[in-house]
Amino acid sequence: MPDTPVTSDTLETQILPLSIAGQLVQSASAKLGGLVSRAYESLGEVTVEAPGVTLVELGLALRDTPGLEFDTLIDLCGLDYMGFKDGRYEGPRFAVVIHLLSVVRNQRIRLKVFCTDDDLPQVPSLVSVWPAAGWYEREAFDLYGIVFAGHNDLRRILTDYGFVGHPFRKDFPTSGYVEMRYDAQQRRVIYQPVTIEARDITPRVVREEQYGRA
Image 1 (cartoon, rainbow, N blue to C red):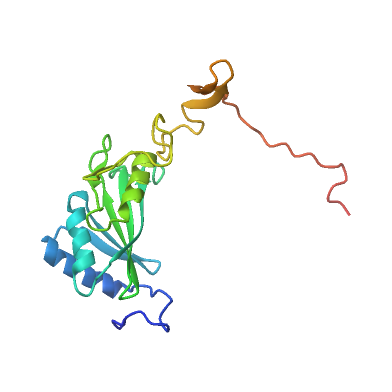
Image 2 (cartoon, rainbow, N blue to C red):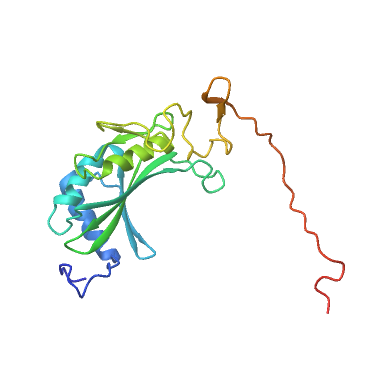
């Protein structure tokens, strides 16, 4: 792929071929001492995996290395691999995925890091590399319970202050733990244990006797 800057004729984002992933592994490995785990292509998209401890260093390499220049963080989210592959998956439960864009080179890449501790998932914060990561990291903390070390304001952003648990975890109950309602006597909103009764819902199909017949 020619190294051409973005122009009016190249507005459509190019899909990185595997050869670019190989160059990326070489560039990142040279700067990080071989700490990059692997890079691979799937469905025309490039993914780079690395240990969580190297996240900040790898982020700086992806942003600052000539020929890479991934200067824009597009998205950051958490992953919960509990029950993955029908329970046959034996790797770390939690991971963080970051999608990056190089505006100059009109290229995209996905960065994935795994949390080594399932009980207290934690990775370094990327706010110092891409300030836009701030709210995304708060979202991943809120929904998955992933701690971003070094974040200067790591608190919930979508759920309430007194919310219990992390709702995007696979073991979080669908109905949650508590419900909220207005109490007329206390004249305020209160929390109480969930009162929804678990039940099996069987669809019932009712058709006319001659339905579908000519």
